[in-house]
Length: 410
Image (cartoon, rainbow, N blue to C red; front, side):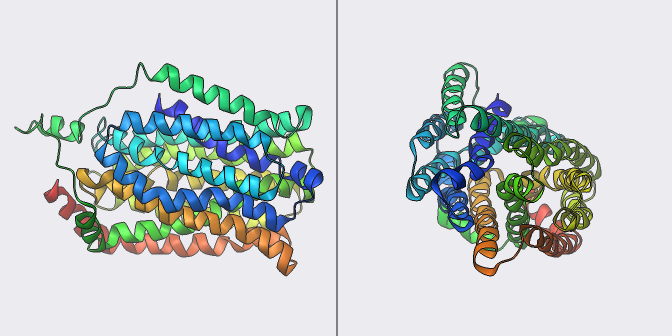
């Protein structure tokens, strides 16, 4: 059920990027203005993420998840009425406010169904909805925009999201906090969830947790690169490779996201197997994905051959999936249950500030500095290389101690 909610979480946010060329043609928007529209979502999403994490830790997560679904779906529908830059900025920012509540609450919910033995695999399966939603939103918006008008897909996505929420209200079950691990241990406190932790106590603990901090820094860099691809690849294909809008919407998403689906399943399976008796193994899988994905990012930006670009996107997507599968499971290895929603909220804030910066930076570099899109895309390979090396050091030097500390506090 969460898989389908997350599908719309990403389909709704991705749809706008496939119709950038139509907005440019109809309203005369520049790349810098389109970059502003693209980054409005991510900045509000990031700013409000810590608050969303606190809400997820303090209130029933089922209500938080479904409430967010209704809000972002309705706001997506309002996108169809926009005609000016500030209109799009406003609705994208509002959509970010609605969507920011989803991941802290949903990942906490999944962690209460799955202990460390199966957590990476469970979250990697859920992660495939991110890729499917990205493909679905991009392809639907590109095809409907070309056929019926740029606004049409937003109406369809809005109605579908609200209907899904009404159906799932009946079926989603709210587990107790830390239910899976407490049931697995057979402890006497199996019926008593951990106490809610004050925000000040959470922050103090986070500042003494170097592994968690470095995971957030890595997420900043990985999301910077990811949002460059999500935001600008449809336009890159349409302009530099002369693809139709529908073909660009599909091509910009399907190769990367299908590759990521496969990589996510592999990454989740490897991490669960390797993590037994090997503290930091999940982070090691993440670093492997970043380092192996680096040359394919450079290839995507530097090639002028469409076939080579598709190969590059596919392999970049696969190795991105290795990293993505363990984003939250790696964090939960070093974060006690009472802090999980808050930790995801802070990490989302850091990561999506990086995403917003990446989304805006390419548009700025093209408009203000005269760089080509390909050159900017290729240059982001350096970011992947740096954060990959950082995670290698974290897995070897920091994670074992912080994982043991979190197990004691559990």
